Length: 116
Image 1 (cartoon, rainbow, N blue to C red):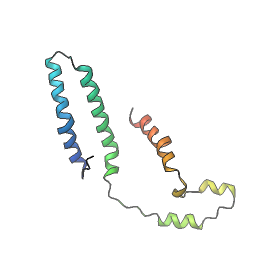
Image 2: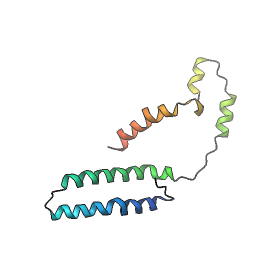
Image 3: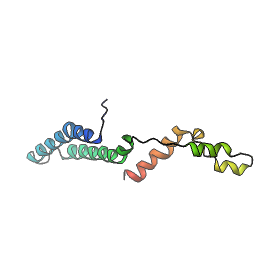
Image 4: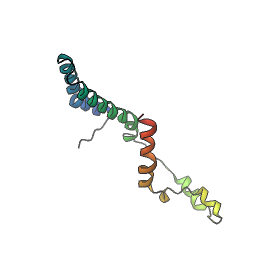
């Protein structure tokens, strides 16, 4: 598995490793009267899908920011959970089932709304 420092390096890798051979296949396909059309179209669709995911997630993958949630943590600690309706305002990120969230909410949402 390769790890890249920047999105630009990833794009160069993808062009040299996948897009260039794909374009050669496209040229061969044209010379052979479309004999590889289905194969080329399938590979080109997959390449475009991967590059779309890179465009969507790339900025998040290379983000170097640091977030401070101390004010929210102080607020959460001062709240008393006495009444049942107080649970509505429970915003402790430690109580979230992150696996469930990603597999049942986030990823299906991405597939439904982003990868149309």
